[in-house]
Each structure stands twice: as C-alpha cells, then as structure tokens.
Image (cartoon, rainbow, N blue to C red):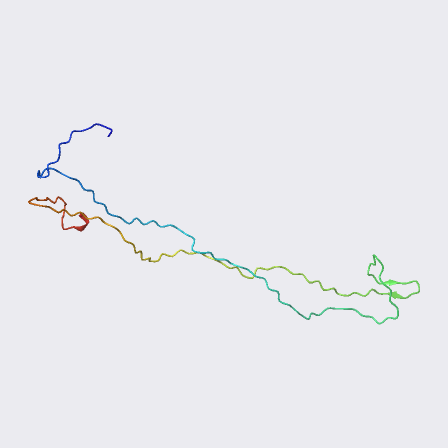
Length: 153
C-alpha cells in the first residue's frame, strides 16, 4: 500500500459509533441522437422519342421544256441568253432544312425535409437499493433528507 499509512483500531461491532460504508449505484439513461442514413432517393430521367409527321407546303418551279442541261459548277443562277437566241432559265427548288433544338420544358424540384416524430423508447434501468438488517438490539439512524422519497434511496 503506497502513501501515508494511518493507524486504524479494530472495529468493535457493538460500538454504535463505528461506521461501515456501502456504495449504492444506479443506472441512468443517457440518450444520444445519431444520424444514420435511412435510405436514398434516386431520380432517374429517361428520354423517349415520338415520331413526328407533318405536311408542309413548299414551292417547286416546273417548266415543260424539251431540253435540259445540268448546271455547271459556279452557275450564278441568272437568266442567260444563249448564242442561238434561246433563253436559259435556272429552275429553283426549295430545300427544307430541319433543325432541332433542345428546349427546357419543365424543372423538377426535389426537396428533402426533416420531420420530428415521437419514438417510444423502451429499456430497463437497474437501480441498487440498500437495506440494512440488524441482528440484536442495534438502532440504525437514517440520515437521508427525506426517507420516504424513493429517489433518495
């Protein structure tokens, strides 16, 4: 045994001033809230294609001619008078150009909320109680503030 030693007299069991200590314990509930992932929300986007068919008007020039000559590279498209006096008129055709562009149709908002609910916790807490049993003519003095209060035991 380290530290200063002290002299102790042997305890006399009949001496009412002689004391013995007993330590009493009880469990207390200490609740800690931890955040755990309860699941996930997955948002998937899919693309679908819809066939579109429209009839649109377009202009096509036509001429009934007995002679046709393919246009040469760099043809200006102007009306020309040929050497024999005939007129060469270019024929034009509208070419439809289809362009596609991506437009925003709607925006999906996903919000996460936290709600507080009531959770019924059930557990057991142990508590030690001290009782004294006396044998013979021994009086025990109860020094608790309120002996009827179970929290004080």
